[in-house]
Amino acid sequence: MHMTPAPFVEPTPRRIRVRLGDELVAASTCAQLLVQYGPGGLPTYYLPHEDVYPDALVDETIGPDGQRTWAVRAGHKRAEAAAWTHENPTGTMSTLAGHVTFSWRQLEWYEEDERVVIHARDPYKRVDTLRSSRRVQVLVADELVVDSIRPLLLFETSLPTRYYLPFGDVHTVGSMSDIVDDKHHIRGTLDLSNAVWQRAEGSAELEGPHLEIAFVQDGYVAMRSSEHPVDDQTLLFTPSEWEAFVLGAKDGEFDVM
Image (cartoon, rainbow, N blue to C red; front, side, top):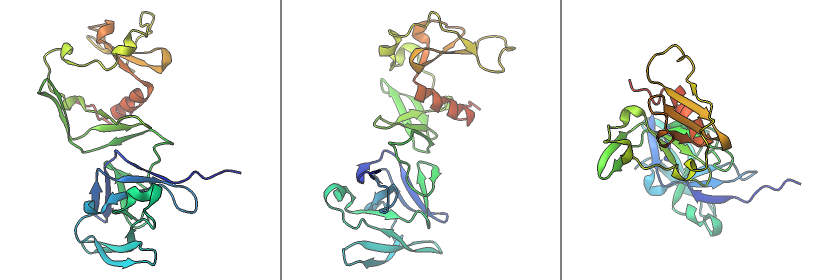
């Protein structure tokens, strides 16, 4: 017999927004993700009550168990019984106290800047890359080297969020030595001496410097400039990083113009 796992709650690193028509009714970077399956419902987000826009919740009713329900109003639109609290925010659900969720059928949900339908994405069943309009800044020795409001965010189970930024938002830095190498612990274990380097598709006829890539052991992908084919100036990508990079490139995220 298949056993449905017990529901659980955890904070989500994703920015969550909820719309009724063209109007935002809630936006939060402190939402809680309720992972649940079965008759109780599907995964959903609960947002802090203070992150719900003023006057969005109207005509409150309180059930016999204390659960609060509201109609949602935005401009000339109204959705009946479209927001509510958890029915029993105690025990393992205690972090949902003071939080509100919304109807997935009547309102529109967004993770970062991308629409999500039916239910929240379960981070234990998938890896996601999401476009965002968050402002991301990177400083090296107090010098601003990246300032972007169009990052691509990579969400992997139990790992910190990774931010991929368009090349056009990177400022010129003094030298490659200013950049911290987050793959230094990997470089010593990878043998690139026999790597088969290839140019990007469609570039075989191009003259001058170009980028080359090689697929190496353990699923890593190496990238280098034909002008500087030395190991310490070779970029290394994990399989998930490469997948996110390719997705962003296909969508034009790294186009300079």
